[in-house]
Amino acid sequence: MSAHTAPPSKKKRKSIEEDSIPTPEFTKLDHINLTSHSGTFGVDPIPVSWGHPDPLVRGPVICTVRHSSQRNAIGAHSGSYCVYTGLAVAAGKLNPEYVPNLKLTSPVFDIGPHSSWYDPKKIASIDPFGHLTTDVYSSYLNKGFDIRPTIAITKAHIDLPETREAVQSGRLKPDGKVLLPSGQSIVSKAAIEPVWYLPEIARRFGCTETTLRQSIFQMTNGMYPELITRPDIKIFLPPIGGLTIYIWGDPDTIPDEDIELTCRVHDECNGSDVFGSDICTCRPYLTHAIEECIKTAQRGGAGLVIYFRKEGRSLGEVTKYLVYNTRKRQEGGDSAENYFACTEQVAGVQDTRFQALMPDPLHFLGVTKIHNFISMSDMKYNAIVNTGIEIVNRVEIPKELVPDDAQVEITAKVFHGYNAGEAYQGIDEDELKKTVGREYAYDKPEGGENADGNRGNVVQD
Ligand SMILES: [Zn+2]
Image 1 (spheres, protein in one colour):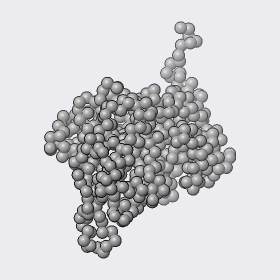
Image 2 (cartoon, helix red, strand yellow; image 1 turned 90 degrees about the vertical axis):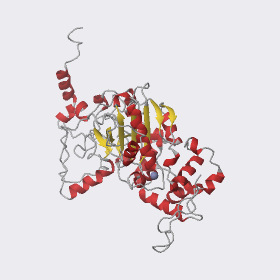
Image 3 (cartoon, rainbow, N blue to C red; image 1 turned 60 degrees about the vertical axis):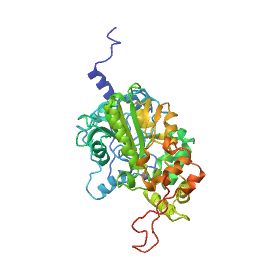
Image 4 (cartoon, rainbow, N blue to C red; image 1 turned 180 degrees about the horizontal axis):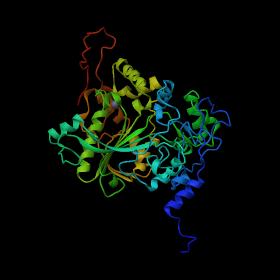
């Protein structure tokens, strides 16, 4: 090999890289620039080639307020919390020109790279280099650019009463590695902010990119004019909740199809997940999944829970509680038969979770095969399988974990095609009609006959 064709040394390569990176322009934040005015926003955006395997060719996602002419993404960092950043600046607590010190923030374990990272059909709602900012974009950071990670990776010990109970009753056996005698389990975890590549998001929703941009612009009351004025800028950091990945066992085994992987994809339900409300199966299903994840990790595999901030089927908690009231107050009380109709009556739609983007974090982790999928949802199953991931077993929630008042939910779901396994086979119209929930004396004075939550005519089988 001649001297001319030898690859440059790492140091030389780094300096070539830095030479090709423009000097950052810093926006003065002492006056307001309207992003709808040409000449004030995105005059010279850093190019992005979504899906390119070389992170420098792919380009960093630049979405802070510091580089308005070089910014290449619409939206803001931190999802819905971006508004609090505005409050902090308004309150005089945060200097808007502050650039984070990322020195000690890098991931505590590795994820990727995987070939799925370079396929927009597999990843279009996450930046797969989002945790590697300080590594792959160090040359930009060295030049003074404000580029922020959209993924953070750390470890934790978690302590759940259901896991302790499983240890006490002998269902789980502490091994001192995955599960401690105290009932604490040891997890690796990642928090992920949404980063959308709009052309692929549109494809997955079966609409044009223009329709997608117009719909979001309209339904947010014009929150981001660039969605309309800058069709050349394809990246959008939407002001919505992100997701968290929890892993039990060695994360390195996740892409290995020969090593057992147990997985639950869970959509946030604060009332049940955190506060133990018994109207649905969310927390029991989640803690059951965690138990199965721990067992899988103890067998040498890995357990995975992906927790999406999609409260109330992504309709939000206010809508959800309005639906609860409708369910309980309707003629005949809460019933499996009218379960979905009540949501539609209040919100105009049954569900806005749309699982089309859900498999992305699985592809981020390099998942190609799930041995045990802890979910009864056909929508989730189909969304995952349709992106080329194999699912071997679907694991239902054990019947004894379904709260009485949640019989309405599970019966309605199974009647409409969910797979809840052996225990919930053959739910017919009759079963659907006779499954009803607890009655509340919502409209009776305090201390009324049902105010203590006595069950109404709950049908159990
Ligand atoms: Zn729930």
